[in-house]
Length: 221
Figure (spheres, rainbow, N blue to C red):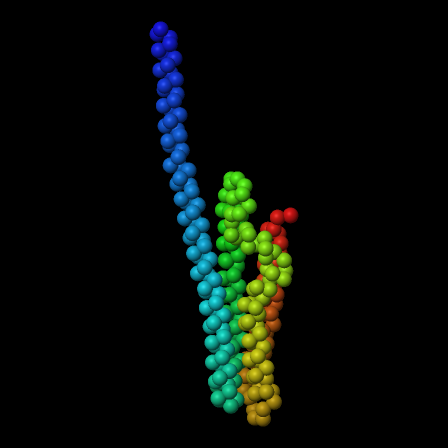
């Protein structure tokens, strides 16, 4: 009888210990889910903010471009207007670098969400939820080709060198064709603008190739 009582007490202790363990694990799982959701929401918020910043950078480039051309037009080729036109390619060069840096951070966030958060959750889900979860995974899967993945971002990057080309063409007659002596600074500024334009085009093409390579590498076979 004593042996039976001892065995029952032992089983009760084990059951109580298991209940404590299960009760202790449940809050940990809930906290993990809360942490993942908080991180996901934070990253998505930052992604949207960076997307808005991208359009702000483009808007600044267009505003400066329009203002400088207006000054050149109403200034009828004055020296001050010519300087402003030739300075725009430098501004476009710096804005392009800010744009590219922002885009790279966006892509890093997108890949983190896709590979570190969505992929882990998809692996734990059961059909049909496993095939219908993960916006970033779905978006990249349906925009993996060069015509889809790159075309959407080509316009944004090429805004900067394209507008720089227009300003250089507009400044060319005032530097090389109009009568009158020009200071060496004008010629130097013109060639600096040319160099900035060439580097901007090279950066744009290189960044597009890097993005496409990254997308292609991260796509499942």
